[in-house]
Length: 249
Length: 310
Image 1 (tube, each protein chain N blue to C red):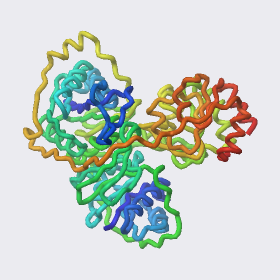
Image 2 (image 1 turned 90 degrees about the vertical axis):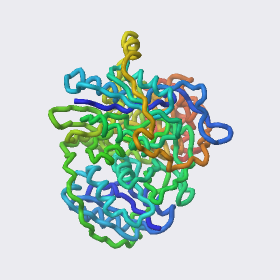
Image 3 (image 1 turned 30 degrees about the vertical axis):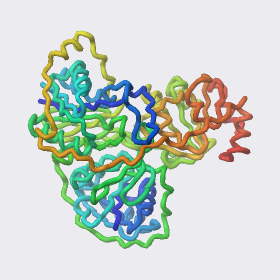
Image 4 (image 1 turned 45 degrees about the vertical axis):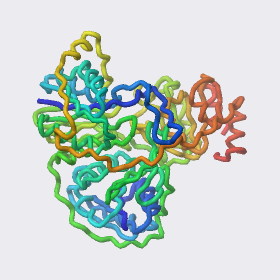
């Protein structure tokens, strides 16, 4: 069984981004870029399914600028077998990415696509569900446990009230939540090996996909700054503030 | 111009988040219709018809909707979508699962997690864990939107006079089925709708300590209980307690953060609270930079004191 794992290159989760002075966006020049943490969890899950003998091949795919190659090499160092870069400098929005991925799915015919539930840059939480809809496949979003047997996947999902388990007929889409697994660190030998793995380069036009953005960002602003308050001396002072100043209790 | 709100419900009643979405739809302007896709969900449809501002309820009742699977819900939305300029869902686990499918099937972009309506085409949404707010304009003829509940005051549950219209339910997709659910039972207010939240982090050390220290305080304040990702990852509490960028977004009147250091991912979920109290023994913890009232103290002493003195 082949698993496709889309991965996104994003600003590292430890970086606190700054809004550009002209309000045109956030400043991502010279900041550390990494694989989106949820995508890392997706790669790890695919590798575990391969280690269990469920998957036979893992194909990582990324869409974006040339440097997304590094993200794909990283996925291959964790254990993906090969990579596909859909290279473009265009602003890619989730619907366009879902269409690009659908074209890759049509070509590669994976039984399972495992994606991160959201990217920590645009926080959109759309691509996996959109891809599932375009393919007419079942989806299990926010997965915290995945079991694949035969032609179905049983997935436990983190939902607002607790947990829900669904069964999907393969092929299907799974999006990962935080507690699905803890991704391994890529070892140096595996990083070296990953450099030799196959990495194909495509353009959106090769896949016949129009990636024209539907949304225009008019401006990006700092959120209203929250004023840090005061430190109180003790519990009695805290209660006094809450009762008499904030009047919330 | 007419707006279609995808109701989140449990067949018998509406989930609170639906009321915030109805308010967002009203802010866009035009008629507000609500789709209740359920099974034996007449009660939820009737409740939707009562909500202020709702002029029509579409009730799609069928076995395919018994477990609220997103594959069927999205197909149902698309079946009734003709004529609507805006399709809105709550930015909850349910809404986030359904709305992007709808958008893709309609070949439209989705605008996720809006916090403000600027005009019928333009919306404000947080990006980068709420460290920036983007104003985005859609060029699509139909806008598919998810709404951050805490950003819109809930519509009143009465005062509406919507007509309930029955629409044919779609057939089951056949690609997904419900197996089971483990829903956390609690007498407490729902986290996203609570007026007061007591939230705990890694500083509590264990699940036993989390309950021992925080439960009496939450009981006294009639508060919902939340947690940081660290506390959930460590197994102190179930996943549905998590507040943060990828957990629940909350904005109560009072948020009491106990033993939470305040990673940006956590702050993203609670910094719109009206009053924030932080209790932490580390005076340099980032949580103090957003807290209205900070108490640098050993939480194992301070919280029981706070509970007994309230």
